[in-house]
Length: 144
Image 1: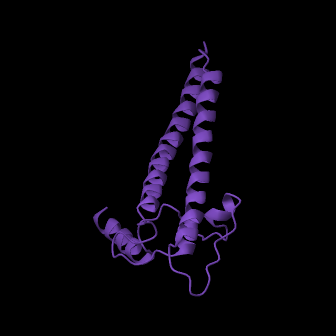
Image 2: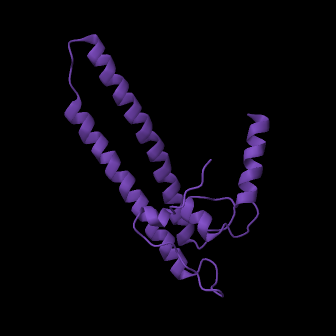
């Protein structure tokens, strides 16, 4: 997988967070930074869901030609699968916001260490530090 130089913050028009040398991890400023990223991401996904619903309503045509009908059904099926992935992502975003509200955001659910600002900017819904995530993926490959 190629790492991108774009952080989640940059994608949503926010500058990457620059922590002071002695700054406490997940202080209120950092929590607000990640809340802004998560809310912008959720808003974007919700707008996309709305666009899809309107598009499907506008495009829903009963084509007499079975091939045209099959093409449309295939396109709608693909859009619905994409929206289902986005719905699951919105759920993860909501869970991350809840962790922020509870001051648990940014800490690994596996070992409790700091996940890290740059990793969270790249993947704002991350719940595991890079080491625990790597171990998780190794286990998945062994049992998958």
